[in-house]
Length: 332
Image: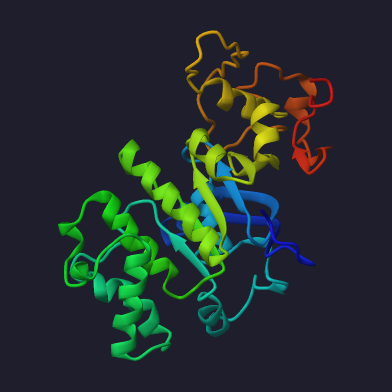
């Protein structure tokens, strides 16, 4: 349940991240036209304190880039990022370093994100040492307490990442992210590299830690089943745009945008008697280097009309606490 407060913990307005791909010397000498990749295209959303906002979309749609830009691990090209009432879009790096104690990330790959030459004690305790928050002895005590909270043991302190299973390595990554007592955590596909049985354990751990520590999550996944289970609200992303946002149960029960309907209709159903309208998409995901005009989804949408090919739909209210970017949402 969300905690009431006068403003969202995180508020994003018209956020953009554009990569210039041919800005080198040889390209300028050859006088090639500029080539830009708009990974995040004027995205707007907010996250309330204490809630989990799920972010879902196909691989390559910009989910991870958006998350890293929100944390300013990638610098935004445009728009604004407001965290706990403070505009951090152009905050100096010295101030951002202090703020990062409150904003952490759990990475997708539980092996590549850990230094193979460091022990668990060094990996989990490093944030405390970097921020100067504890002395050596105190760091060890806090690391032991954090490991126990994520289901690991004191005996694991001296071991190295290669000595653990995938699920255990992800627990180490979670411990490292939470050792600074953050209030906001980006979970960047934290279970996609794990076996299904282990996924359930890690999801249960994240939910338990959220309740115990009062955390706020931006939870990223391409698995709508996982997103539906962990989220209070869901944002659906397509080719750099947010196309629909709404409370999780309502959005899953009655999606407004054709892309959301297609995602849901592709989920296998256990109940053979249940019927769901199948929305079949045609064609491949367009290249972000040359997105189609108008609605970016119109090249694959079975309901597209001429207006969809000419005019970009705005993200607008379509119900209580629900928004969607589709010209046909009223007609649907």
